Length: 393
View (cartoon, rainbow, N blue to C red):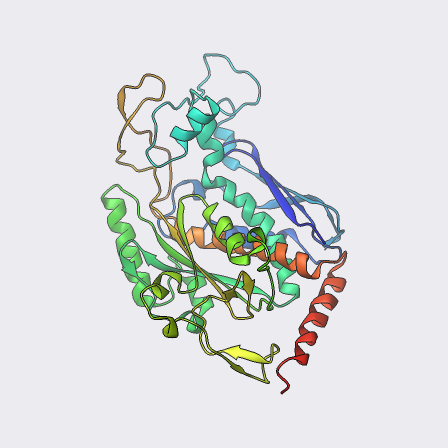
């Protein structure tokens, strides 16, 4: 079994972010330009904060790739934080004098990692918590996932995303199977139709004027995943469980749904199950007439598009801060304000794609693992050919 894993390190305003990806086979074409293209998508989005005007994310590959081809060894990447130039004293790894601006934070932001993190790690300066809890870390995940995405492309898996709600505005007029993904990419709010695009922007503008923040739901879809990724035999090998954990790890995410999970609870069983029929044109020799299950049954992919809906709450930091307390004195105080987005739904779409790519790369390597890309592709092709033995009457 090929083991796939990745690690990220770094603080929001530190020198940069370090990424290590292990388990990628040899022979995969991979360039810094490909990774940069994916990372630039994370920086777009209507309602983004001022940080995106400072950073221009690019991952420098430091090892594991030679002449634009992976070697099979760990891939190390470095992402510079340009804003560190303004934080050299505050984020210095060495001791600094009392005359330096250490940018100490002691006022808790409700809904952030500040409070539990300070008590758990015994920190009297909340910056020691919020720097790593910041969504800046997701830039490193997108870099890691770009490598995973490049691998998935080799066996025909593609991943897309869109915003389906922003605040109380619903944008699901277009069914998942009918979405023009190029149009979504062109939308600043990642809406799938022009009406939703306008309504989402109005909702974000109103939130900005009200000096608050706004959340929503985004959808991530994987096309081309073969049947049988994941497993029913143990709880921790179920594909939907892996996906749910990955999505819940994204900052501010509070809910995950596979397929029509929540809507299915309001329908009778005969309207929920995806009926199967013979289909000689399908590589599986069968097909479902619907996809309410979101491409996963019994913890395994069933060959349909994998559809994941993710609920992300409004960002905790607001220009009109909530009442709070000082972590050290216990006195009533206004919550601290840190520069942030008004709405992160569009930007979170790309992070959701990243997490799905990382999970799928893991289960693909578990199922078809090999030391080279060609070996993995042969294993996958042979497995799909084995389905021909079914459904022949």
